[in-house]
Length: 289
Length: 289
Image (cartoon, rainbow over all chains, first blue to last red; front, side):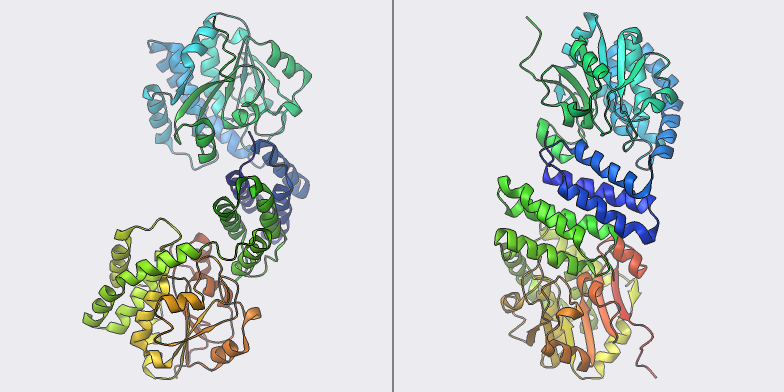
C-alpha cells in the first residue's frame, strides 16, 4: 500500500509529538525541520511504515535517542500482563476457545496501552466488544479451518503489550508449531525481541526478528530466516495495520487480523473505522478445492 | 508570536486538505511534497500566518489556483447575510447594544461557515453562548470606555462571513469614524476587498487593504496607508487568531477580540479552548490616568 496524503499529515503529527516529548525546547525547531524535510523527501509510493522508519532514523541520528517509547512499551507490557490470567480463564471457559482467543488478540490491537492515556476500564470494554462484534470482513472461519489442518504457523506480531494477547492466541493454536516474528529494532511502540521476552512470548514459542526496522514488515528488509519461514509456513497470520500496509500486495496468502484505526485503511479495505477485520489477501489464491 | 511545533502539524494538515480538495489525484504527491518542503524550510521564528502564506503561495505557483476557498467564502457570506437582520434586531432590542454587538462579532469569529460543514443550528447556539458567556480575558469595559471618547477606529477584519457580524458591531461604533482593514489577496477564508463588498461592509464604512497576503496582519506587509491608520487611530480593534498571532507583540495598544480555537493559542493567552477573549495588548500601555 502506498503513502496517501493523509498519511503524510499523520506522520508529521507523529514527528511533532516525538519532538515535543523527546527534544529540549531550544532544539525542537531544528529537529522538527529535519524530520519534516525527511518526510517531504520520502518516496510516497512506499508504504507509510517505510516513511515512518526513515523519520524515526532521522530522530535517532539527530538526537541519539534509540527508543523514545521504551518506558511506554514496558508499562504497556506490564499492564497487559496484569490482565493475562483473567483473559486466559475467559478463553478456557468459552465454547470456542480458539475463536475467543482470536477476538481477544484483535482487541489487543487497539489497546495501545502506552501510547494514549491508558484507561483501565477500556480493556474490559474492548474485549467485551471483540467477543460479540461481527467482523466487518471475516475470513476467520477459513483461518480456523486452515489451522485445524496442522502444519507450521508464522505469526507476525505488531505492538508491545498487544503481544501478551497474541500469546493467548498462540497458546490455542499450539505454540510448538508457531514462529512469531517481531521488529528488528525499536520503532514507535512495536514489539522487538526484548518485548517478546518481557511479555512471556519467547518462553512459549520460537520468536525471530523479521529484519524490519519499520513499523511493519516490508519485504526489502526481510532476513533470510524470515523469508524462509514466510515462504514455507502453512499459515501466515499478520497482526495490525502496519503489517497490512506493508504486505497487502504480497504474492502469498496471508490472514490479516486488525482493527481499522484510520480513514485511509478504512477506505483501503472498504470497512468502517474501528471495525474488526479478519481479511485474507490475496483472495483469489484460496487453497480450498 | 512564533510558529510552535504544533503549528507545523496544523499547517501540514491544511496543506494535505488543500491538496486533496484542489489537485488532480495524479499530481497530489508532487504538489504535497512542494508544500511540505516549503513548510519545513520556513522561518519558525515568524508567526504561523507567515508560514501559512508561504504555503498558499507555493500552492498558487504549483497549481495556478488563486483562491481555493472562493466558493466556500461566498457561501459563508451568503449564509451570514441571511442572519443579519435577525441579529440586528436582537442588538437593537438589547439593554446594551454595543455590548451585544461586540459579543455577536466574537461569536462570528468561530462560525467559519464555509470551512467546516455548516450547521444551521450552530449560529443560534453560538450567539446564545456569546450573549451569556463571561469573557475569559475581559478588557471589553475598557474598550467600551475608549470607544465612548470618540475619535477614529481601525478595525482589523478576519474571515469572510464573519465580517457580516463585524458590520453589526461597526454600526454600533459609528461607521463614519471606522476604517476596516482586510487582506490584500485571498488566503484561506480570510476577507478581502471583494468579500467586504459582498457582505455590505464597504457600503457602510471605509474599507482598505492592510497589504497582507497572510492570514493575519504582519508588519512586514503593511501598506503606507494602513501604517498611518494603525499609528493614528484612537482605538484599534483586531478580530481573530491570525491577527493576534501577527500583532501580539506590536508596540501600540490593540484590543484583540477572538475565540480560542487551538491549544497553542490557549497556552499563549492562558485561557481555555473555545473561550471568548477581549484582550488588550500590551497591558502596560494603558492610557488611563
